[in-house]
Image 1: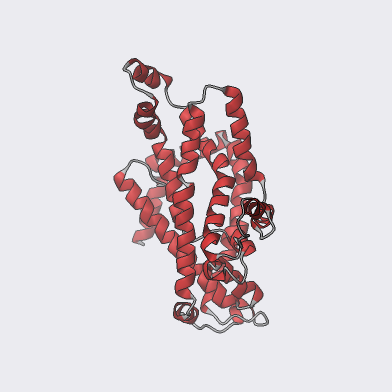
Image 2: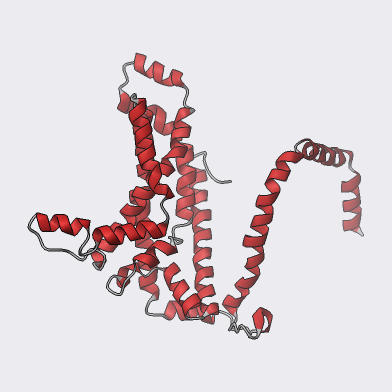
Length: 319
C-alpha cells in the first residue's frame, strides 16, 4: 500500500508531470533523429543482445539434439578445464604479447602522422601522403596476409634481395621469432593512415590564435606541438586509449589464423584462434563458449578499470 501510494504521488506530482511532458515534447520535436537512430538500435538488439541468451551453454554440457534448455547443467567445469589445460598459459601469454606489442607500436603512429600532416605546408604532397597512407586500410585481411606470404616466402621478394646481396634465403613465415613482428608492423602499415583521421580533425579545431600568439612569443614547432597540439588532442587520445585497453584480450582472429602454420604455432595460437578450433572445428561448443565468455569478462573489467583510472587522473573518460 505504501509503495503504491508513493508511485501515485510521483505520477501526479506537478514537477514530475512537467518534466515528463518536456521530455516527450523534445522527442516529438526531434523525432527524425530518433528515426535515424532506430535501425542501429534494432541491429544491436537483434545481433548483440538476443544472442546473449546462448551464453548459458558455457555452464552446460551442450548437445545440439537436446537444445540449450535440455542440455544438462555442469556449472564451472569448462572454466576449470581451461585453467587446468597445459595450453592456458601459452594462449594468454601469446594474446597479451601480441596485443601489448600492437598497442605500443601502433597507438602513437597515427598521432605522429597527424602532427606531421598538420604542419605540412605543401598541400599537394600532403594530399598524396594522405592517399598513400589511407589506402592500405581498404585492403582486406585475407589479401593483406596473401601479400605477406608472397613477399616473405622463401622465394618471395625479400629473399630475392637477400640472394642478390649474397645471403641465403630465410623462412620468415615459419620463424616464430619473426611472426610477431610481421603481424604487428603489417597492422601498423594497414591502420595508421585511417586512424590518424580523427586526430587530424581534432587538430583542425585548434584555435589558430593560440599558434599565432606562440609564434609571436618565439615558440618553435616543437614547443607549439608540446604545449598546444598535444593538450588539444589529449582528451581524444585518452578515449581511444581506453577503448583499445578495454579490448586488450580481443585481438583479431582472422589475421592470426591465416598466418598460422605448424612451425610458428607456439607463438601464433591465441585465445580467439583456439576458441575457433575448439568450437567450430572440434564441435566443443560449451567449452569454447566458456573461454569466449571468460575473455569478454576480462575485457569488460579492463574497460571499467582503465576508465576509472582515466577519470581520476584526467577530465576525460567514457562516463
